[in-house]
Image (cartoon, rainbow, N blue to C red; front, side):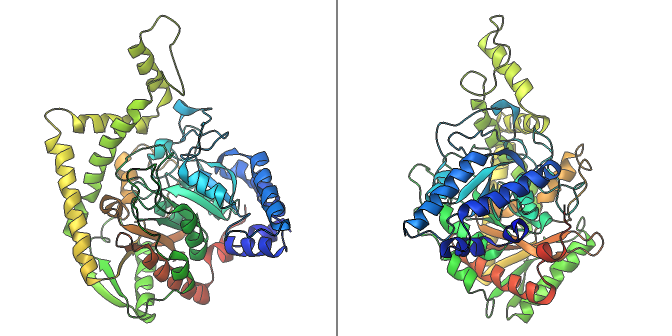
Length: 498
């Protein structure tokens, strides 16, 4: 029974709970049993809230028994990235500096999940403060990719993507600053969506880079992602960057996928040196598939995209150096050296030395330098100018096409430890995803097969203009249906059992 339940999609689970064929408690217990059975090997979760999840599930079953109308995801379990505050549940952001911290309030996203009767199973592992592309920077150890536990599950949201690929949860939440939803989705054979910047509230989401960070849905199917997107999106007066606009009809688009008559752009800068042959092969096949489905393929030239990586690694660290200044050892979280023999400045220094990991320190130092007197215009100011050029390249492109497609990542999942001592090699994992964050557009990654040389998942990235998130789901659903019809779902058909 457990195996049958955990292989269901979120939409199927919700339908069976609403009809009474399954109870929310049965579904929750099945996923908790799966977590207990496999997460010691995968390490997707940092904290499992067993009692809280079962209490939420019981509340859903009581609602159904009373005849109350249930929402489209009522009773469906979800894994929540450990970057969103959750009352009564630890929120560490993968860092020792917040080890054991219990938030006194819910993030807006957390509250919307609870209001929709989604069952939150626990908090997932992540690169510390979302800084990384492999989940190796977590202070609590790396997460394994369920396809091959010796390889990375992507980052920073590797815990969320691994929970989906290992069938520990049918839904998950991630955050995307430079690709941290889409890149993990690509390397684990799952679906991940970065909504338009400002479409999902950042209130209660621990900040890394405020002009780039964006929460979003993670799932195993395009429809499941759309259902979750609809729950978490929408204006929030608590977030000054939140967009006061209607949520695009993402669920309708996912149910009616089609690319017939659409213009699909292919950017020449998104291929070349450093791209794995199998990734390029699967991408080219995807483009040909789109053509067969009725799309017009348009070649695009976006020269500023070649500068995106450099611009990102000035803007994001600069904002991080400002945001992380609040972790001073004086107000909350870890405090080191407060024995009466050290000044407040020394306590702050000792706390940060012990509490922050190497990658966080690297980015704080880089950002502080870029913002310092005499260097601001040369580095941070120039990076913002490049950001404007990237935005303009997107605007010009979307005058010619409806969506843009590319590989999500240049390679499949690499071995744990392979790039640990080479930050530049690690940063290149986000080569295709970063331009979208700099421009604030919407983007999705979905599986497009396995690379022939290693048998690991490859992701297809779809990019849409801001506030046109429904186009992602319209195209994504069409591609997914065609892939499943021809080759089956890679995660369900070919994923190794743990």
